[in-house]
Length: 304
Length: 127
Image 1 (cartoon, chains in turn red, blue):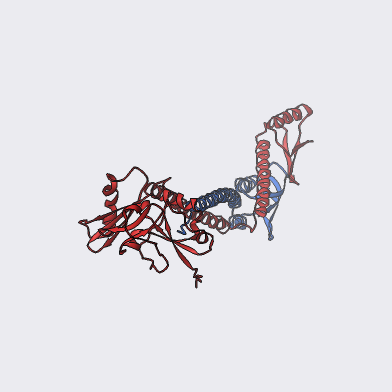
Image 2: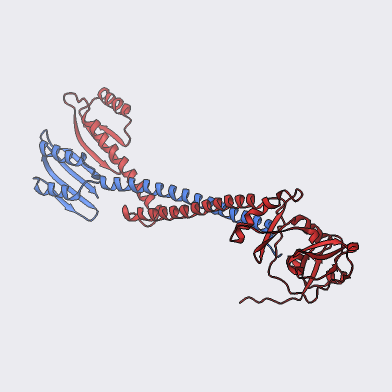
């Protein structure tokens, strides 16, 4: 459950030529800002559209010819059969708020004077030189000297209308379209990253299970250290056995002279001892040189 | 006008993107390690398995020895010991060809020539 502390709200007419009351600025109350007609352009229109969103799309072209160049935001609402269209500069309003020392966090809502005073009868003071008056249902500013009976503007008992606007604090830097485009690109990029992340995570898990599967597939010992030790032992034995077979093969291929024979062949403790009978020293030397060339390890010949 | 400051959104987006990039990098590293680990394990496993399978069948040797003449052999859990007092040349050739051409682990061996036709044989093979 969210708790919302209800703060007292004060109404403030924001006009470039009338500074707000000091006590209003110094209080901690939230402010409902009423924009003076000096801060926006307004048009009363009959548009051949059914919905507000359709009307909203037409606003930039409707104001294009009649207002000065600038970064405008637009707003529209329906009043009877007609539309009231507004164009305003966010940066100008923000600048004014800043000038009067009004923090954006203090602002409860922002409204056009049109939505508050369209039912006004007579002229009401807005600043030293201008008055608020309603002409043909549109709230406008007129010079004070034109007005006959100027009444002071009392904001205390006014009802806050539902029509309000939200200022774009950074709209003048990047327009909405560009912002949405950048946002879409960033979101797409993030989506790609998330997809990549999920796919990588899946792959990591796949390889982990593959890793575990090696042990059962090849019936390995529980640790790789054990397996490596067994493999080293097997390799060593394999080398020894190959060496023994090579040595025997070489001995059997020796060119034995008449009267010379192999008396015995003994293999023990990884050494092969061959006893050759009937060989004289010259012949023994010849055999030794043959065996030496073959580089057989662990073979020793004894001559009798 | 309590709108979220786009700079905060930008900062959050950058943090999220950095986090995602960091996670992706670490997962890539993990994947690389897993792959390397797998190939290293498989290399050892294949080598071990092939060397284990290289050992010729015990049954085949015992069957051969049971039918051969002039031999006595004793079987242990670790291997087999052969003994032949006087084998003729042909038999010696056959048994030696059988053992040396197959992958039996010869632990010890002694062949002594008795005369031109006969020899004695003692051999110990381990599994």
